[in-house]
Length: 325
Ligand SMILES: Nc1nc2c(ncn2[C@@H]2O[C@H](COP(=O)(O)OP(=O)(O)OP(=O)(O)O)[C@@H](O)[C@H]2O)c(=O)[nH]1
Ligand SMILES: [Mg+2]
Image 1 (tube, rainbow, N blue to C red):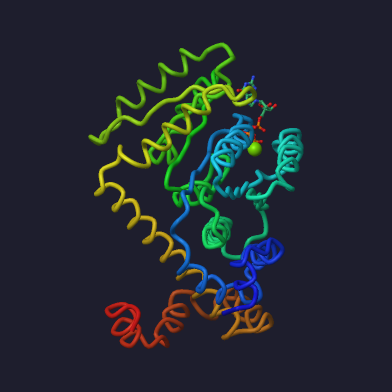
Image 2: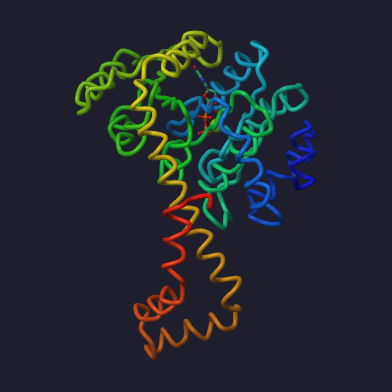
């Protein structure tokens, strides 16, 4: 076994941090480590927390850490920082709160930057979840701002998705509909101390009534994250969704969907990476692009010739039809 995975499995937190850095930057032995750790993962309860900027996600996450830690569970957190431009002050708040947990045994918090990921933010974040899961964290909270495809791809990995809304969102409830609305398992109306709670509740239930499928309506929980009000109810709703509410077939479908997605993403990420590292140099690529720009070659036949070189018969015969052989 890789020495880093070994140390991490023994509970070495520095090894855990280093592993997460390798995974995040796609460097070193990260693939070998992920292969090893993946086999040990799959036990954690992953809770995704998403919603618009400033909705109180971090404050809720802080409360949920307290809740689960208080039950004696080991809690991991992956906070995907929104790009600094649009949430200056809140981030500082996050950091301060997070620092409070930095020295607490059984709690581990990791921030992921949103920029500069080779294989995409979603891939890096999902692999970070595998690492934390294998490292024995029983509950893993993932915070993302619920906009953009990356965030949807991240939150898709969660077993339970909490969508955080706030009073006074107005048309924003409508705007969130695409993507996250469909995958939310629990709706949280945070900042319930503010005016307009009934209104957002009403809009939400109208929207949920329009849902086409026949699965049970997801629970709606009101919270005041700053005081902790409603957190026990929220945890209970998560528990219930997790244990009884969803029929087996639905969970299976979701799991298959998740693995389909992960496989496709990984295949394209790795394929591209192999091509770039094994096949070409920067200079060669540059020349290739120049030839394309000068229209000496066309991109269609070029890509087809690359793919024609792959021994497809072998790939399909042994890897796909007999996985694991
Ligand atoms: N009144 C009130 N304020 C809250 C509540 N929950 C959070 N806040 C405040 O709302 C602000 C934003 O909270 P955060 O937890 O940082 O929100 P966030 O969704 O994580 O923000 P981003 O990560 O920047 O998207 C902070 O000033 C919180 O103190 C609440 O229930 N009621
Ligand atoms: Mg936050």
